[in-house]
Image 1: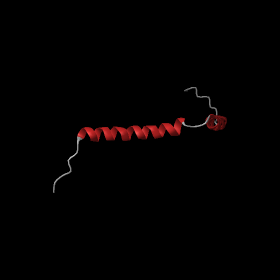
Image 2: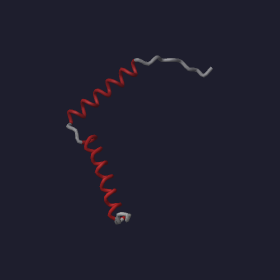
Image 3: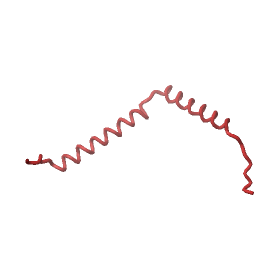
Length: 64
């Protein structure tokens, strides 16, 4: 019943590398796109925002 001996310095470095790899994966998803894909996403978001704004009902709230 002996526990496995680990080096904490190596464990911390391994954990830090793992966290950096997760961040790198997120960055590849976010920033690793072609210019056309970025423009398409931007235009779709703008269109959805415009549709959302056009569907709002304007009210006059005087606070009274």
